[in-house]
Image 1 (cartoon, helix red, strand yellow):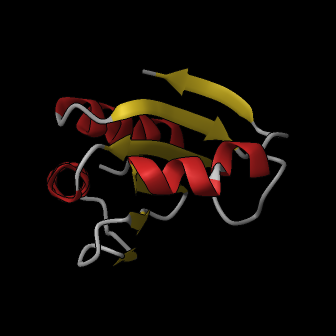
Image 2 (cartoon, helix red, strand yellow):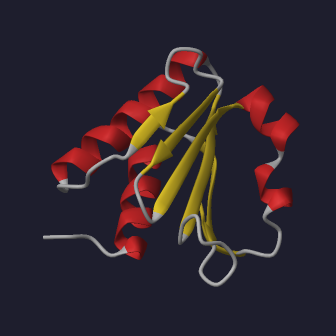
Length: 115
């Protein structure tokens, strides 16, 4: 069974929420970017929480049969980038999220989910 990009986005949001990620936002990039259909953006308040959020998303993706194309940043846990194909997940440390402000960069995108 393959997940649609929307189901994959919802799975990532749920997994992040399970680990108490803060300010979870999903952006709909369809028609705006060729990179992905959705960005999921959230943050943790410590390096350990950032790693825990990313690990939970990876576990849920594997359980759903999703191939993760790449994960970057797990060692430093300041900004973990997860490429799930049609969904790209950004798990920030709180300080890094404020600095990079990705939502502002993609302000043309429609916000489809906030938790």
